[in-house]
Length: 148
Image: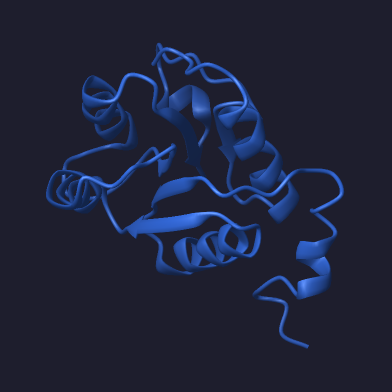
């Protein structure tokens, strides 16, 4: 059995612990496998997902399509000169109520100096499991935006 992707049963096990949603999520992740898996999890939970492979690509989508985005889920370290924090700052300047969930595979203390990161609320450590992602998203969407 291929365990690279969660089965329907794995994803269903996240449903009782967390609510699914209908919000729109801008998912920014430079690792294709992580981006694809995260998108699959989110779509199966009912979210509309717009994906981008970098902060620069996400900013281009934001400017050109002007999507109605409820939540930005972004990796903190990305290529092409625009970090997750930089992207979040640019988008928050245009939409102050935007909720943001940061992710990283690095130590958060090394990549998030001076940031107000709260595990499971506006930050999750990679690798994460579907229930962790789902729970953090509902937590982030269910409270006022946390200052960067």
